[in-house]
Length: 366
Image (cartoon, rainbow, N blue to C red):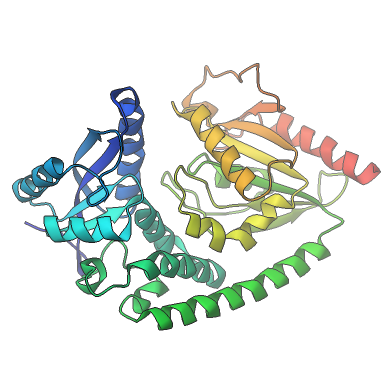
């Protein structure tokens, strides 16, 4: 029996991962744990999780045809209406799976896009998310693809982009061009604002989603940015200028969190926002020291920083959430200056702020 949530049917989902061999199966099981959190953030109910081992994805169904049959039976048994894949699917794979399973099929990029659509607050963020949604949708606008033709709401149908899902390719392309022009204009405005702050010391907070960047931002700036124990609480880049306690004015910027397999459409559409990171004088790379996959998340954040041209920006690594892991000590082999803090409990912040004062003073003297 379907669960009603407000005016729409809630997705009751089976999660699917694919491992190339048995040695990598554990990695995919762990990745499915993150997919489960994404699904919960989007409002879905997770019924079961499956990881299939096969050397390469099936061209037609991504997973093997045998598993497709098993999934159809499992959906019927558990009253499921959705299957979520931990990897991107091609339009053909998505179409074939929906026809075979008679259920909604969502891949990881679409799930993340949906969460971004739910969290976008400012006009800029809504435009950026809509652009990413439309670029994801464009290759899927075929008469045979049932995912959108029988769309009944829920995950994948939020945000301004939903009104474009039934239009033809030309209308979608026109809308994409329109949004790109508006975002380009917005980028020029951002560049003008950055130019006005060129004499200030610019600090950007970066890190994996849910590492506690916004909590640290609030603690360092006495701001009141929303924080929550969920993925992607922050989408809109927030900037705050500080003068008291620093040798020169300092600008802090809180940024959207990164995540493994971040859809390339989002990276592209958020580039004007992420330029705040690439043009910063110093990055605070925030990591959750209570997370068992902390080191992997640090590496994934560095990969995104390289993708947006910010790999050469000086940075400090801030191991946050000491309150959740009081015995943690910073690894000794890290090349960056490291601080261990609890932004929530205001522990270790004095040493971090002292380092920021020194860094800002160096910039003033040069």
